[in-house]
Image 1 (cartoon, rainbow, N blue to C red):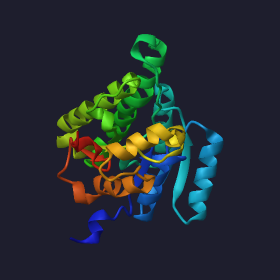
Image 2: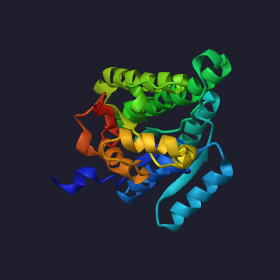
Image 3: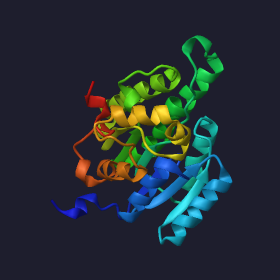
Length: 255
């Protein structure tokens, strides 16, 4: 197999929530394969730092701050990219939040915020990207799901509902957009050692549970998501659509 199948030279990738964590790792991985990167985050200071760090590493990168849960801001961001002549070839819907509370104590506003950021935002951002990809007859959408796209866990109901929705959103994107030359797929990360998960890693009981429940016996590292993201962003996956690939150390396949 030619390594050119995984070459992203000449492509532009927008990764939401990419100033740190999994999004940053995927951005750096795609940049290393030749892609121009559009970093995104709601925190302008952190985003500016990430842009500068990637530029210092020799990557072609720009930053565009917007809150993915603000539809008007998403639309304005794509219009700004249009004005700059930046055409997004690859979209990674990575931005997300978590909220933990038992369902009987869960306020509707907290439910809605998690759904808005993790699910509705993925729809809106992908819709805006696909409206521009369709006339070109090509494009890649990668939605970041979760183990909770197919498994349940107490106290994270809105997150699980959103990530289950990501799975079906991805399948329907594939159904509607396949004839337009757009492939839509998802990645389901397992428990990854990110900043967001630091409190869980530092919880001895939870840490032991993750390691005991995962066949590989450890947390995943952010850069271990990169290969799957590059595959789904590249020509190597041109006949793959509507799928979810779990990158979870085997957790989803054992009892």
